[in-house]
Structure formats: structure tokens, C-alpha cells
Image (cartoon, rainbow, N blue to C red):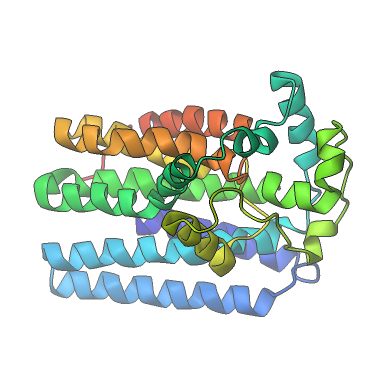
Length: 297
């Protein structure tokens, strides 16, 4: 698990070094990596002295917690590259004949439906925790394999997000105007996202509890990055495969409704194009089977 993170750390450090004058906050990015490196080495040292299940779980929790730092960090790097939203919005139009992310929430406005969508989206990190703790307490011999698959998949998504800057509808529609999008016009935005992070108001029932949770999460750490493919759909797809691998019918059935909601919710709240969600399903399955080939003991 940590070796995957350290490899990503080295790769992105080299990118920062080579693009030092173009990156907005190079010093903060470098110091952030140093802190993560030191923390990782300390956790390794503690586990070597006290090799027990509790310390292993703490190691996992620490690296999972760092994902909330690595995610916005992708924006700090990919905003120096050309934006690909016009291409993906045009592809969306060609495939579906419309913009599902624009129309979905307009056709389904009932508060109950809105709350279900927001519930699905807000369940992302809790579902990851549920699966990891299930493996920790019920399938401990497979815990490292489970976490390795998840972390390797997360890191692979982050690499894709860096080299393929796509912001998604909530940012791109805001940048060019919803009127333009409704007309099927998808202009280039140049380096707009290098200095702008404005996004559309999240659609749905604004008085809803889960709606407020989603808005709070967006306000806290959302950046114009990480749209294609949808890692929300991809990671939850992997969680479904991990539940299947654990041969736990109860876990699988518990995850299933949240998974279905997640697949639709990413488009409903305008975080992703529909093709992002489809790509998330495909890549999530591919990553699960690929990283499962590595024998983790």
C-alpha cells in the first residue's frame, strides 16, 4: 500500500521539479509530500516494533486519510495543462444527443429523488470504510490485498486526472454559461481553470439533509479536476467486486443500493458527464482484476 503511494509521490515530485515555474504552489506541494513521507516512515517503524492488527489498521487509516490531500493536489498540477472539457462535452452530445448532466436534475425535481441522489453521492467514503473494516475484522488475511487494490486504483485515477485535465459539468458549464451548453456549443476555455474554481450551484432539494452534506463537501475541498473517468463510480465498482470476493452476501446486498445510487448521482449533481460514469464502471472493473493479479501477503 505505502509503496504505491511513495511511487506516486516520486512521480509527482519530478513533475513539480520539471514544471517548478509553472506550478502555483510548489513549496506547499513539496512540504506536503515531505510530511506524508515522514508520517509513512514513522508508521513503518512503529509497525516493525509492534506488529499487530491495531497498528496495521492505523497504517491503513492514515494512508486513506491522505487521499483527501492527494485529490486537490491533482488540480495543482493539471491546471498547467490544456483543458479537455470541450472534447468530452462534445462527445457526450454525440453519444446521447443531449447533455444528461444538464437535463437529469431538471426532469427529476422531487425532493425524495433529490435526497436519494445526494445520499448515494455522500455515501462514498463511508462505503470505503465499511468494506475496509469488514476485511479488517472478518477477512483479515485478505486485508492487505483489499487495501492494495483500493489504494493502487486511487493512485492510478489520480495519475489519469493529472495527465487528462477534465473538470466536469459543474465547472465547465459555469465557465462557458449554461445557455451555451443548452445550444450545443462547447467552446474552449483556454487557461481559465488555472485561476478560476467557480462552479454551478448543486441541483436538487436545497433543504435536504444529504443535499447540505454534498454542498459542504464541495465547499470544503472540490476543485476543477478529476472528472474523467469518475473515480466515485470506479471505486464503488471495486467495492462491489471486493464484496463479491469476500463471499459475503450481506455485505454485497448492503452495498448494492448505494452503488446504484452512486452511478446516477454523479451525473445528477453535475459532478460528471454520463460518459465519465460509464468509464468509471469499466475502469473500476479493469483495475480490480489487474491489481488483484499482484499477490499481496
